Image (tube, rainbow, N blue to C red):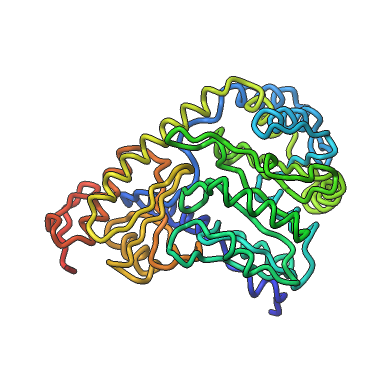
Length: 405
């Protein structure tokens, strides 16, 4: 069978694959602890569930406009004014079936084959593959000093005649690092100077710790006219714990939103009426659930950090947001894929190899689960790797004896 060039060069999502692996092992009765996940365990806002149930019971679940229902666009406009300090019009907004689709439509609207897309490493696993789906070339910028934030000079060095787009994701998946105002400001200035598009992937922007507050990229822009090439992407998946609802959005200049809407209309038509209704209720309802989730995540972060700091040989940059930490385990195993496979095989703990995020030797450990899972998962990891740990471990009612150290 002959497949297309794109089909032969696109890799499956490692995070989705790990979710499937964990579910399959659990179905077999294995005591799996999933520390690789990217969705909070809290429930969606009750307002969203009630609104969705009300529409479902009415039986009136119909096609929607390709760019979203009016109520959804109105909620996005209000959200943009509140959190970004910018008042936009309905023509500047497109709702989508998840933030991922919004990014994909933006890429398809601006990229030509052989154009280059720049993003800092570590990066979300999908950025390189999404660029390839457009026939474009992904260009990852790995900071020379080993930190998770590049210098603007490092980004500028990679901007060439084929560069069309830069992507910033802050707070960052997988590191949890929040980029400095200096970097964001410099990137906005660079994009304006060089005529580049800038996607701000802000899906985690309200899940910040240690007193940090969401910042608006627009405050650094000199051009906020309809020539502005900033594209802000967000959604309800993370902050409202509505991952399965698949509702996101993009805010950009009208011409670009029009093009993205045409693309989306040919891909999937408009986002689900039912799920948009639920998203509107979450966005317009009480926001205490977002703060509750943020506080839970910050506490979970603290528990995980304490355990990682007690682990000899592990280097950690403390995350300031998201659900993730990205510790360097290269002192134990240079290959993050081998390490992840080892931990799954020996102690049934799921982590994500750092290689998938553009940084070998690291693993992504999530703290969006329960405190119990974080504590037990880290106990298992330490038992598997540290020769100073007790030689025996009880896991799922079974006693294991370590025989590989």
